[in-house]
Length: 177
Image (cartoon, rainbow, N blue to C red; front, side):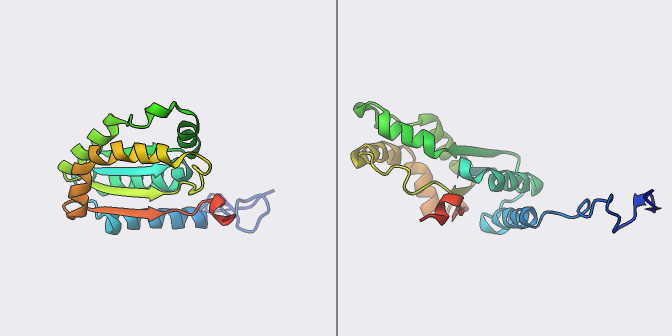
Protein backbone atom coordinates (compact mmCIF):
# COMPACT_ATOMS: atom_id res chain seq x y z
CA UNK A 1 0.00 0.00 0.00
CA UNK A 2 1.30 3.42 -0.94
CA UNK A 3 1.14 5.91 1.87
CA UNK A 4 0.08 9.34 0.79
CA UNK A 5 1.21 12.68 2.07
CA UNK A 6 -0.94 15.69 1.32
CA UNK A 7 -2.88 13.73 -1.33
CA UNK A 8 0.26 12.52 -3.19
CA UNK A 9 2.29 9.32 -2.98
CA UNK A 10 5.08 9.65 -0.46
CA UNK A 11 8.46 10.56 -1.95
CA UNK A 12 10.85 7.67 -2.10
CA UNK A 13 8.14 5.12 -2.65
CA UNK A 14 9.01 3.05 -5.69
CA UNK A 15 5.50 3.59 -7.03
CA UNK A 16 5.82 7.37 -6.88
CA UNK A 17 7.17 9.29 -9.82
CA UNK A 18 10.41 10.97 -8.81
CA UNK A 19 10.36 13.28 -11.82
CA UNK A 20 6.70 14.25 -11.87
CA UNK A 21 7.30 17.85 -10.89
CA UNK A 22 10.79 18.19 -12.32
CA UNK A 23 11.67 19.68 -15.65
CA UNK A 24 13.99 17.87 -18.03
CA UNK A 25 17.34 19.74 -17.76
CA UNK A 26 17.74 19.88 -21.55
CA UNK A 27 14.23 21.28 -22.01
CA UNK A 28 14.85 23.85 -19.29
CA UNK A 29 18.08 24.98 -20.98
CA UNK A 30 16.40 25.04 -24.39
CA UNK A 31 13.59 27.15 -22.98
CA UNK A 32 16.05 29.55 -21.32
CA UNK A 33 18.01 29.84 -24.57
CA UNK A 34 14.86 30.58 -26.56
CA UNK A 35 13.86 33.22 -24.01
CA UNK A 36 17.32 34.79 -24.32
CA UNK A 37 17.11 34.83 -28.12
CA UNK A 38 13.71 36.53 -28.09
CA UNK A 39 14.17 38.97 -25.21
CA UNK A 40 17.82 39.92 -25.72
CA UNK A 41 19.00 38.58 -29.08
CA UNK A 42 16.36 40.20 -31.28
CA UNK A 43 14.62 42.08 -28.44
CA UNK A 44 11.07 41.40 -29.60
CA UNK A 45 8.74 44.09 -28.27
CA UNK A 46 4.98 43.85 -27.65
CA UNK A 47 3.23 44.37 -30.98
CA UNK A 48 6.34 43.52 -33.04
CA UNK A 49 6.25 40.66 -35.53
CA UNK A 50 9.05 38.09 -35.82
CA UNK A 51 10.45 36.35 -38.89
CA UNK A 52 12.31 33.10 -38.27
CA UNK A 53 14.34 31.33 -40.94
CA UNK A 54 15.22 27.89 -39.67
CA UNK A 55 15.87 24.26 -40.44
CA UNK A 56 13.90 21.12 -39.79
CA UNK A 57 16.99 20.13 -37.76
CA UNK A 58 16.03 22.81 -35.20
CA UNK A 59 12.34 22.09 -34.64
CA UNK A 60 12.44 21.99 -30.83
CA UNK A 61 14.38 25.26 -30.52
CA UNK A 62 12.23 26.96 -33.15
CA UNK A 63 9.03 25.99 -31.34
CA UNK A 64 10.39 27.41 -28.09
CA UNK A 65 11.38 30.67 -29.83
CA UNK A 66 7.89 30.97 -31.32
CA UNK A 67 6.36 30.34 -27.89
CA UNK A 68 8.53 33.05 -26.28
CA UNK A 69 7.80 35.53 -29.05
CA UNK A 70 4.09 35.19 -28.39
CA UNK A 71 4.68 35.36 -24.63
CA UNK A 72 6.40 38.74 -24.95
CA UNK A 73 3.57 40.10 -27.07
CA UNK A 74 4.38 39.44 -30.72
CA UNK A 75 1.12 39.40 -32.68
CA UNK A 76 2.54 37.21 -35.47
CA UNK A 77 5.52 34.92 -36.04
CA UNK A 78 6.36 33.79 -39.58
CA UNK A 79 8.53 30.67 -39.81
CA UNK A 80 10.30 29.72 -43.03
CA UNK A 81 11.61 26.17 -42.85
CA UNK A 82 14.40 24.61 -44.85
CA UNK A 83 15.27 20.93 -45.09
CA UNK A 84 18.61 19.48 -46.16
CA UNK A 85 17.05 16.57 -48.03
CA UNK A 86 14.65 18.77 -49.97
CA UNK A 87 17.38 21.29 -50.80
CA UNK A 88 19.78 18.57 -51.92
CA UNK A 89 17.08 16.94 -54.05
CA UNK A 90 16.63 20.20 -55.93
CA UNK A 91 20.30 20.99 -56.51
CA UNK A 92 21.14 17.40 -57.44
CA UNK A 93 18.17 16.61 -59.68
CA UNK A 94 16.28 19.66 -60.95
CA UNK A 95 16.62 20.67 -64.62
CA UNK A 96 19.64 22.86 -65.38
CA UNK A 97 17.60 25.90 -66.39
CA UNK A 98 15.52 25.97 -63.20
CA UNK A 99 17.91 27.49 -60.67
CA UNK A 100 16.93 31.05 -61.43
CA UNK A 101 13.46 30.16 -60.14
CA UNK A 102 13.03 31.29 -56.55
CA UNK A 103 10.21 31.45 -54.03
CA UNK A 104 8.93 34.95 -54.77
CA UNK A 105 6.41 34.47 -51.97
CA UNK A 106 9.22 34.08 -49.42
CA UNK A 107 11.16 37.03 -50.79
CA UNK A 108 8.09 39.26 -50.75
CA UNK A 109 7.18 38.16 -47.21
CA UNK A 110 10.71 38.84 -45.94
CA UNK A 111 10.73 42.27 -47.57
CA UNK A 112 7.25 43.13 -46.26
CA UNK A 113 7.95 41.98 -42.70
CA UNK A 114 11.20 43.95 -42.63
CA UNK A 115 9.42 47.04 -43.97
CA UNK A 116 6.92 46.64 -41.09
CA UNK A 117 9.77 46.52 -38.57
CA UNK A 118 9.62 42.82 -37.77
CA UNK A 119 12.59 41.34 -35.94
CA UNK A 120 14.43 38.60 -37.82
CA UNK A 121 16.11 35.48 -36.44
CA UNK A 122 17.99 32.94 -38.55
CA UNK A 123 18.71 29.57 -36.95
CA UNK A 124 21.39 27.89 -39.04
CA UNK A 125 21.29 24.14 -38.52
CA UNK A 126 21.73 22.91 -42.05
CA UNK A 127 24.40 20.37 -42.87
CA UNK A 128 27.25 22.30 -44.51
CA UNK A 129 27.99 19.26 -46.65
CA UNK A 130 24.41 18.82 -47.86
CA UNK A 131 25.24 20.06 -51.34
CA UNK A 132 28.57 18.22 -51.63
CA UNK A 133 28.93 16.71 -55.07
CA UNK A 134 26.38 19.01 -56.71
CA UNK A 135 27.34 21.49 -59.40
CA UNK A 136 28.28 24.78 -57.65
CA UNK A 137 27.07 26.74 -60.69
CA UNK A 138 23.53 25.70 -59.82
CA UNK A 139 23.74 27.32 -56.39
CA UNK A 140 25.46 30.38 -57.84
CA UNK A 141 22.58 30.77 -60.30
CA UNK A 142 20.08 30.44 -57.48
CA UNK A 143 21.88 33.10 -55.40
CA UNK A 144 22.04 35.43 -58.40
CA UNK A 145 18.22 35.31 -58.51
CA UNK A 146 17.62 35.26 -54.73
CA UNK A 147 19.83 38.13 -53.60
CA UNK A 148 18.17 40.87 -55.68
CA UNK A 149 14.74 39.58 -54.66
CA UNK A 150 15.53 40.08 -50.95
CA UNK A 151 17.61 43.25 -51.35
CA UNK A 152 15.06 45.44 -49.51
CA UNK A 153 15.21 43.04 -46.54
CA UNK A 154 19.01 42.87 -46.65
CA UNK A 155 19.34 46.65 -46.90
CA UNK A 156 17.15 47.17 -43.82
CA UNK A 157 19.04 44.51 -41.86
CA UNK A 158 22.49 45.79 -42.83
CA UNK A 159 21.48 49.35 -41.90
CA UNK A 160 20.35 48.03 -38.50
CA UNK A 161 16.86 49.34 -39.24
CA UNK A 162 15.47 46.03 -37.98
CA UNK A 163 16.59 43.82 -35.12
CA UNK A 164 18.22 40.75 -36.61
CA UNK A 165 20.37 37.90 -35.44
CA UNK A 166 21.82 34.70 -36.81
CA UNK A 167 22.73 31.74 -34.63
CA UNK A 168 24.09 28.31 -35.39
CA UNK A 169 22.58 25.28 -33.77
CA UNK A 170 24.60 22.15 -33.11
CA UNK A 171 23.20 19.08 -34.81
CA UNK A 172 24.15 15.43 -34.32
CA UNK A 173 25.73 15.46 -37.78
CA UNK A 174 28.04 18.27 -36.64
CA UNK A 175 29.68 15.84 -34.25
CA UNK A 176 30.98 13.67 -37.09
CA UNK A 177 32.78 16.59 -38.79
